[in-house]
Image 1 (cartoon, rainbow over the protein chains, first blue to last red):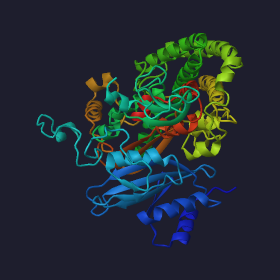
Image 2: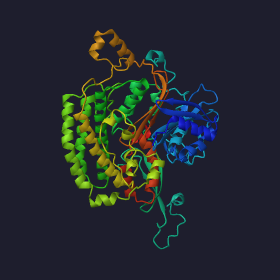
Image 3: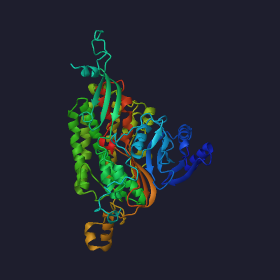
Image 4: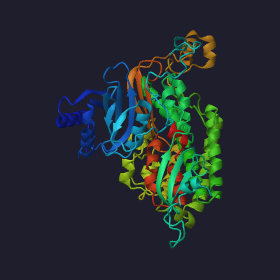
Length: 169
Length: 411
């Protein structure tokens, strides 16, 4: 069987969801990445799962990410999909504003998404709508902020003896 | 008894005259962990029990969460290696190499063949150490202590080999970007040869004692079983997925560090139960020995690190004599290396499955975002489903065979 190439995936996605639905198409060290609108995530995941050729049936990981400068789409989620039969990986990215970081849950499709989404919620405050148990997972329950966001510096901001430029940071 | 105590008692409202005594139909709650000798780590399971049968389980993790992903955002790349040590601490070298491979991919460093082979040897030694721990402790959890003693001395021996290469035993911080920090020494080669000659004997003894043991088989067969579909849906990887019958192994599907040069089999199970997980790990140890033997036989000559002065620390004598070496030494140690902009995902076959590193670099001196894909974190969420309806003693054995490691769970 001929290996599935990235162009085929893009064409399949554009054919099903329209030319405008997928953008930000790029390739990084062989892995295709596409950006899509939040509303498209669930139908797209189901399409990629059920398609008899693509068969993206393994959710490798789900990573939250924060870009404070990107106004209106500060918080993002990167879905790492893997088609084990074709041995092709795919990143699907979606962004939402920090005031309303609402994403649909994938727990209906992937049982593994449960804790991954809880982790993204815990660290970035991303709300996964429809998640059965969206509570903090690694941090303490009464924490009142989401620590991986960029506005929380790692070191004590009141310290003056550690100047970043002097330490090459 | 005071009134308050009575209200809180689980037996309130129960008809004590009914047949079977007062405790029939009574669910009880049992805290398994956070510190419990049978969990082999710090995590909690709140079990709802109906007598000896588990009705429901609720997991709490995060007791040793150390915010590695946040810390990594403020650290130069080479200082992140020490964080990876502390994830799955039973097989630290694999974590180290995985991280090195990720950064090398980002920086575009070609690693010489000899360094790749040494890495393969170290990674397979780490896999051996990991599986020795998992399988022998599983045997201990079912009551067989002696087998553990046959193989555990070889884990100690593997740690001595680590020591020879990097100076540390558990948190190894082994290798550098571009290769290894030192070549295989004479002592290390001797020790590896002793291991290759001696471990098969110990392993055979262990297997002879446990593998076809009636008691062990009764305790593990059909215990904590999971189907291939459910395992994939739960994001299982590594020996746990292969025990369920899916032959996904990162080493053979996406070879890294010259794994394509070696001949090895990927063992798979059929039922996905505790016994299959044990057998898969057992066979993987034999395959690891096979890979190490091949790597030792065909170890290429040549340098043990890449010629990448911007990223690889110069030898200390050079630093005192050579201006360029001094500059590079200073820049590397102070973390003044600007990485290129890019996004990288690299995965390696860790002791427990696909260990992935998703690195986003914005061109700065630290990662913009680093996500560790820890296999244990992802598959451990299937635990309640796997133990529901079984007895408490089966749950202990199931957890042991899943090889859940708290450091990896919580990062």
